[in-house]
Image (tube, rainbow, N blue to C red):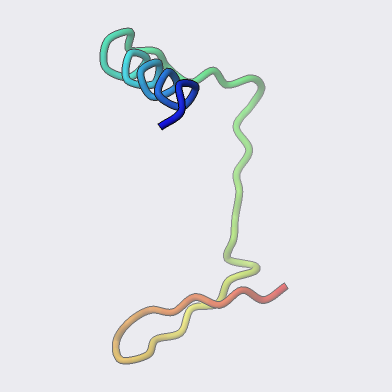
Length: 53
């Protein structure tokens, strides 16, 4: 594993488990909907999603 990747993993562990940092969000929430583009069908009782643009 490269040194840079190892340091990134250590920093991520520290941020989440020790420092308890929260994500920084700038601006207001934006609702994202995907129902307009995805259609759901079932095959053998398993859901299958298809993308239609």
